[in-house]
Image (tube, helix red, strand yellow):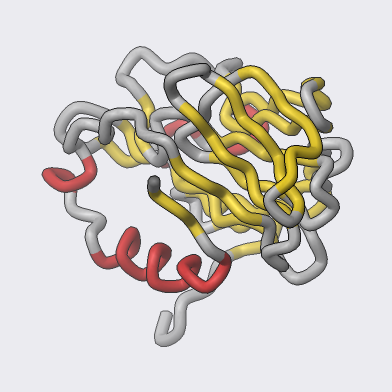
Length: 179
């Protein structure tokens, strides 16, 4: 079972940044597998199980609540009540993408709070980066210290969303050292 831990965020982001070639980016998505996503503090974990298409949130190994669905890109908030699900294609869009397709889904327990469309994430579709067979749009980052959910776009913008509502609350440029 694959497990993501908060301490793996930096190495994961560095790998994604360093491996940004089109050939690597267009590799097929891995087959679905069971995995565990823990909240940033590690107080809660969500087991995502392929066979029964179910996500179970646990505290101290005991089930708290369940929701239908297995998700490739899921994040559990520190309150144990909210889950953010990223686009299943991760950082790549199909060539026939639609501006209204959901890129983020904010959940409270087993109810959708808000779906955020691509048009709310990307300001200028001309900036999408063409790969061999897809378009690179950006990627989900996870929670920051304030509990906001972050998304980094191909436009070098960092978007911060309020986890309880799914509302965009801050947009800031990403500035790389030396640029």
